Length: 268
Image 1 (cartoon, rainbow, N blue to C red):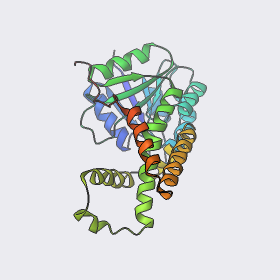
Image 2 (image 1 turned 30 degrees about the vertical axis):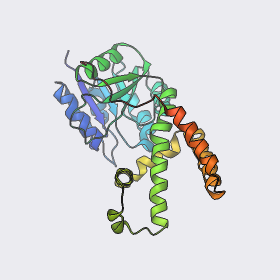
Image 3 (image 1 turned 180 degrees about the vertical axis):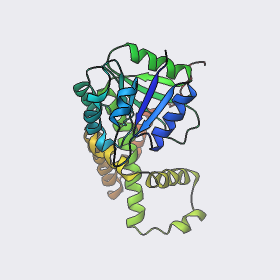
Image 4 (image 1 turned 60 degrees about the vertical axis):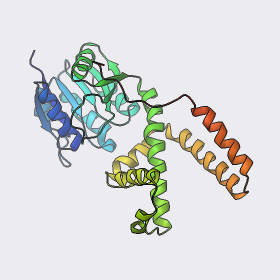
């Protein structure tokens, strides 16, 4: 079976990455879309698999626009960092098979081997099984979940993490920190954290804004973070050493025995 893949928004970094990936799997790949022309109806009508890889704020509109031009037996999937709203749009506007995906890696990765690819089943099994098998054979770790569970997890993994880094960067800027003088005093921990702050601000600001603003689960996570900061700030302001030690010990007990390990690739 000769499968033709179409990437809508394929001129972007992730679109180009997946173009190379699918071509390496022996598939024909058509690329369509730019900032002015999101997709080509002619291309849409040709493909067996249509992949939405556009900025998050135009994902749902692109899904609505392209769906009438797809063949009913095709697969419609997306690469968006959030899943609930894009999945709902795909299921609403396209009657065929639907899969939501989120690659938990960036376009700087050389290979998908050993990296996590989230799949959210939407409608149908034939294309879902095809995609899962293709990714697994290429060495990806496939994580299957619901759109709702995905977005809750991302509110911690992305929402909270990015919020902390944005807040740290903003604090350094508003304090007028002399960055060039930090090198002589930086600890290894600070260097790692500072590197992550720098990396974040060198990425596309609109993507990080969408991740913060469009994930409804972030509200609960960030409210808890705000309360934790206020509590720690109160302890420090009151010079409450026993209180801070108690808090640190509670956290130590919570994290004791847990650690994040590198995911195991399928052949391990």
